[in-house]
Length: 68
Image 1 (cartoon, rainbow, N blue to C red):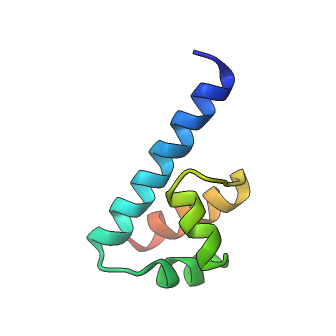
Image 2: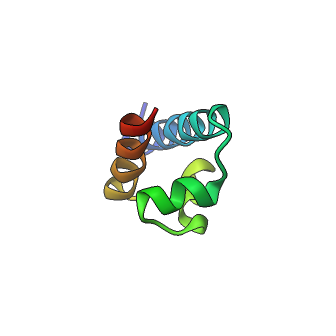
């Protein structure tokens, strides 16, 4: 597996995991985006593996871990 393919798989996995956690707690994209300090559009892109930076993923992950 190439580094690019591995990165794409990781981004899809993280996006799906974030979405599953968000939905299991009845939260909207706006709710989680506000908690993480990022825009709704950015969170949507992260959930759909369209774009993400490691710092944004860490912020979302930190909020998910600290609250749920």
